[in-house]
Image (tube, rainbow, N blue to C red; front, side):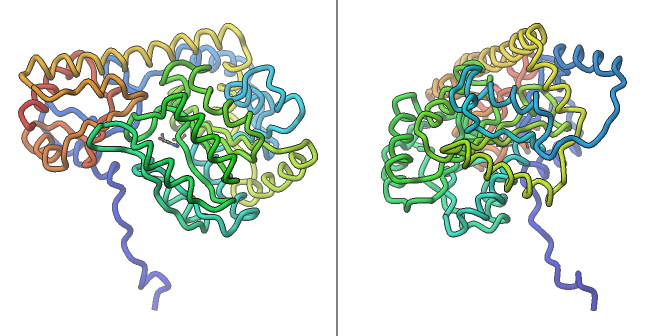
Length: 398
Ligand code: PMP
C-alpha cells in the first residue's frame, strides 16, 4: 500500500479559494475585496519608484550571487532593526538586539516559533480572536498549543479591551502572546497608546513573552509612529520577538522580504541566542536569498531612496484613508442609515465591515463583489472606479 494511501485532503485555504472563484466569475463588474495586498488607484500592484531605482542600480553592478551569511545581509538587518527601534537605540548599540533577514513575515514567525520551541517548549501561544489566519497553524506546526485571547468586539466594532486584559492577567509565566503591533489583520482595530501601556505592563508583571508581528509598518500613521509599540516593549527589558514584513510596505510580496528581531537581556545572552537562531535557520533553508534583501537594504541605507520610499508609503496610506472616507460617504449616499463611521477609525489595509456571512454571500452571488466570509474587506482594493458600485451593492444587501 502506498504511504500516501491514508493522506487526507487538507481543507482549502479560504482566501485562495475565494480568489479562484473570483477569477472564474465572468461578470465585467466584479470586484475582489478578499485580497490581502495593496492595489493602487488603477487596481494594480504598484512597483515603487524607490524599488525601481535600486533595481536599476543593482543591475548596473551585475553583482555576483554568492551565498549570504545565515543571518542575511548585515546592512539589511541593521536597517530593519533601525526601523523598529530607531537609529540611536541603546539596545542596538549594546548588542542586545539581534535581527535576522527572513523569508517574509511568515519566515520570521516560523524561525521565531522554532527557536521558541527549543527554549520554551511547554509554553502556550496566545493569538488574538480573530487573527491572521496563518498564526494558529504556524505555531501549532512548531509544536505549540495555541489559544485565542479576546480581542474584537462585534457589538462595538472595536476592541474588547476589558476581556483581553482579564484574559492576559490569568496566563502563566513564560506563555507567548502574539500581538499585532499596528494595523491589526483582519479587523483594522488597534489598541490606543494608553491601552498598549497597560498590555505591556501586564506582559512584564506576569513574565509573559511578547511576539510582536508588524506586517504593515507605515500603513497606520507613519513609519516611526507605527513602531511606537515596539519601542514600548523594548523598554520593558523582557525577552521580546518581533517579526517584520516588507511585503506590503515595499510591494515586494514575491521577494520574501522580512526580518526576525530578538531582544535579549545582555550581550552575552544575545551571543548565545544568535548562535542558536542561526542553527534554526541553517537547518530550515541555510541562508536567505539575495535579490529582494539587497533592494530593500539599498533603499533603507540610502537617504534619498529612503525619503522617496517614505513618500510613496505615505501615498499608499493616504489613498487607503481616502477610500475609507469615500466608502462611508457613499454608503450614506446610497441610503444606508446604519453608522459606518467605525471604518474611519480602523487602521491599515483591512476593515472588518460588520457584514454577516449571509450578506457577504449575497454580495458575491448577486453583485460579483468578493469579500471574506468574516466580513473582512481589503480597503486597498477600492478605487474611484469601483467604489460606487461597491457601496451600492453593500447598501442593497444590508
Ligand atoms: N503577519 C500578518 C499579520 C500578516 O497579515 C501577514 C500577511 N500579510 C504576515 C504576517 C506575513 O507576511 P509575509 O507575506 O511577508 O510573509
